[in-house]
Image (tube, rainbow, N blue to C red; front, side, top):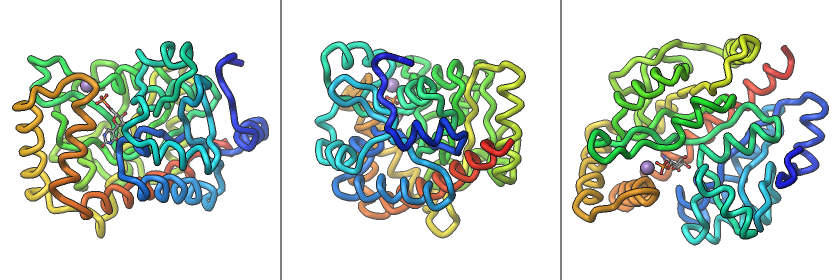
Length: 304
Ligand code: PSU
Ligand code: MN
């Protein structure tokens, strides 16, 4: 057992009994949504996972401890802190632990801590990827590297078009990360159900996802798997409208010379600022949908 890791008793018990457990990230709470919707969403997501027979484990770093499973109060704390909490990627982990500091975990660090705890299925909203213009900026999210090397299944709604989705798929292909479409052959683009790009394989049920995951593990493949689950039709946004907003946000980030770890939070905040409540609502609904699919898959996986 990792000496820096605390597994919440409820989560530890579920793991010991071979029950389905679903990991959840905390950057989506601190940096992804405003208070109090962030806390309400995080708690509702945990409830959805329970309603589908699995146990949620929201992941973060608190007082230098790697936490697999948070209390309601801890989720509330992170939500209120918001952007004041360090956005913790792989390179931040040792520094935060050594200093006894707090960190909100991205997809990368959530995968790392989930894997340490023995949790292999994780639900979120969108992942990081290859940014537009990465051929000169070299801005590629550490999330892709983590998918290449850490055996966790990540259920998301694809990635936002703040990224170059085609290059993101190329990168995942190079690193041998399977990209699955849940009930679709097309890569969803977070706010919209389609992107015009194809996923590697279409999968139509939690049982099929669970079998795929079981075989990936039994083959000794160490990488993760990306499951892309389209936003529910009734919550999806108009592609032309949202893409116009994203173009504006990307242009402003370039003008202002935003770079490094600030880029993604800047773009997300800009899109939210321009679109107001609509994009937030879509964001919440797609996370709920991903939580449901991940919980069903975790339960199916626990029965194999
Ligand atoms: N994309 C979103 N919402 C998010 C993030 C990305 O649509 O909340 C967050 C996730 O935590 C993701 C991180 O892991 O941003 C990626 O940041 P970067 O691009 O700096 O690697
Ligand atoms: Mn980056």
